[in-house]
Image 1 (cartoon, one colour):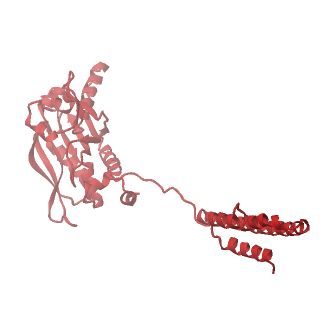
Image 2 (cartoon, one colour):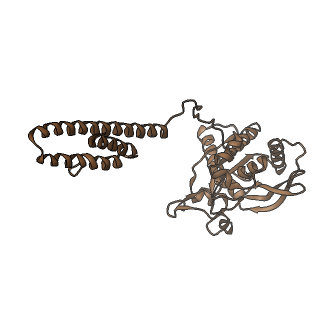
Length: 349
């Protein structure tokens, strides 16, 4: 093997050993660059005779072609290897099952609200709706809670503004304002009708979101309430106890559920009571738990409805759908309802 054959063989070995394009270009420079070995051989031809130049030039040119062919082959091999690695890294396994959207479902609190509306609806209660940004008169004053009333401290809330003909606007602290709005509109509609027949009773529930500055495992700055109102010519506390007892027994599906009405105070009812239920099993066995408040509607509130408290009487109640949801489904932290964790919420689908 002459020197040129050895040079071609060595170049082939160096090109094969180059594992990356940059290393291959370095190897190319050693043989085909301006200071490469073939270039040096061409420079040395100046001392040869004319006939020897022709022979040697042809041999060097043949060696150059062989080296360039080996270089091109190695470049192609490196490019193919890079493409194969890229394809493997970006491979799509078409044998995998498709990604499907899961089926949605009602939020557990929404389930409770629908259940409450259905149960009270079967007792003849309508469903009222109203604004969540309420004015001071409907939220407090119309409910016998004037600006200097101490009960307002229990309703610390978020004010939008404090100016206006009705005392400014705030995020409502309960859904009782919806009772007032519904009752006022009910009275106005009857008056506008010009009918000589007695006005129909007012029987309504007001479910919805409410807001207070409060947050812990059993309280949230935003929570839900379902308030109820029944006003008629002869609606008594006995009717109140009957309605709530029937509701809770049907809600918890227990005919033996025991309720306790404990004297309390609310500015918009008189007399007033807290409603407790007794648990006969589970972690709360042997304990009473408060589930709402109620009472006969205060005469001042009846007047704010536009009615005569001597002729119209009735009761109101307020229940917490969030707490009822916790009890029904065994949830011990209210905040889980509002964290948006699908692992928790998917249990109620």
